[in-house]
Amino acid sequence: MASTLPDNPSSEHLRKEARTLQRASTERLPLHVAQLRVARQYGFSGWPALVRYLDLVADLAVDPSSVSEARLADADRFCALAVLQYTDRDAPPRWESAAQSLQDEPDLADTHIWAAAAAGDPEALARHLDRGVAADATGGPYGWPPLLYLCYTRAAIERRSRSESTTDQMCATATVLLDAGADPNAGYLWRGMATPFTALTGVLGEG
Image 1 (cartoon, one colour):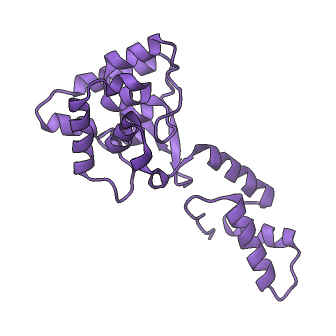
Image 2 (spheres, helix red, strand yellow; image 1 turned 90 degrees about the horizontal axis):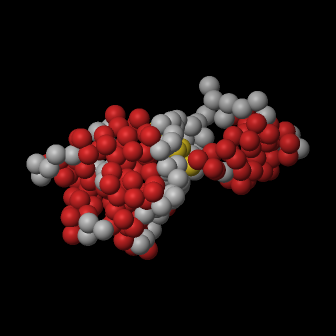
Image 3 (cartoon, helix red, strand yellow; image 1 turned 30 degrees about the horizontal axis):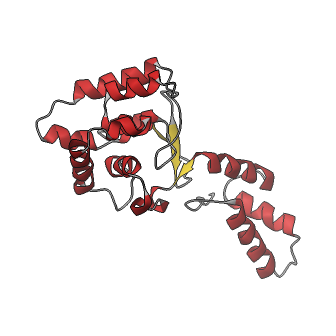
C-alpha cells in the first residue's frame, strides 16, 4: 500500500529523501534508482510523474498556518479571521472578531474584492467588478479567488447569531460572482494534500 505524501510536499524534500535512501543502502544505489523507489513508495509510476504532481501541487497548495496575521493589512487580516482555516486557530472568537471589525469598519469591504466576498457584501462586490476586477482574481491573505472567501467565511455565522438575516445576502453575493464568471469549481489543496478543498466544501461546512 502506498504511503501518503507529507503535508506541504516539495521536490526538494523528496530529493533529500531519495539521497538519504541512497546513502543508507548497502546496494550502492544510483540516485535515479533511489528516486524511483521513493516515487513508487508514494504510489507514482516514476520520479518524473512525482515531480510533475509536485509542480501542480505548488500552484494550488495553501497553508494558512504559514501566514503571519500580525503583518497583514486590515482587510487581509479581516479575511484571515473570517474564514475557516482547518488549523488550531479556528474558533468562534476569531469569527466574532471578524464580524466586529466589519461592524466597526464597514468600508473594509470596499478595500478589495476578497474582503467584500468574505463580508458577504453583494453591493461592495458589484462595485469592485464594475471597476474591472475579475470575478476569479486571486488575492487576499491566501491567494484565493473571491468565491472561496465567500464560501469559507464564518463571519456571517456570527452575524446570524446576532439575529441579523444573512442567508439572502450570502446567496446574492454568490449570484453576483457566478453571474460575473466566477468558477464554481474553484478550490485549493490544503497543505498540499491530494484531496481538493472546493467552494462546495466550504458551503457544506456551513460557510
